[in-house]
Length: 234
View (cartoon, one colour):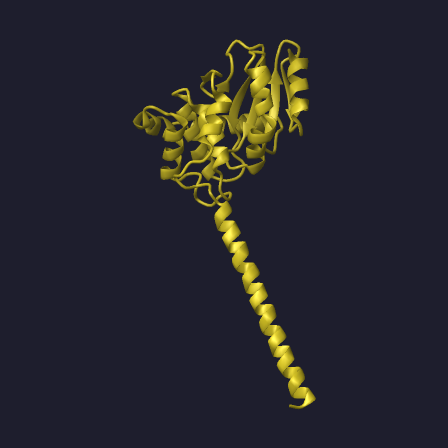
């Protein structure tokens, strides 16, 4: 075999090995992506964690905590928003366990649908769950079962129904009827957020004896910042 032939053969072998390595990487990426996309199906995850987090805390409409609490923390969120999901799992639980559970503050969730039209259907479904005292359970479970934004899952009836059932909504027939008429309320709170000057989610505001009306907090990056705002407002 000539030197030129030997070099040509080696190049073909190297090219083949590179292709196989690239193919293996692409297969691994596909497997990882499909394995991580657990949101949007009817196998609802996180039920035990959400039940433990919210156990014993009153839910009334979209307000979590004692209705008589002096301080009201308002969250404007989009159920499709991954950052909102991060706040639900990492930032807000400590506040729920302390200031909310003690009756010092309550948290009011308001839809701010900025990601896409599917968010309105998801928000209406949450409000319908709230009409039966399970709004926060629905919201928390939705965040733990998110899928890709605007991928068709957030307004999928089977998915939303599975979430409602997992959240403890007792009357699914009533829930169906209620969510059909809740879109207007979703639009109202979204407009409220815009009127306050918010342009992203989650965005927070606070009311309390020392807050001087409604005080805009924007998007505090830590639990401590929200805890301090609650203390200052009370």
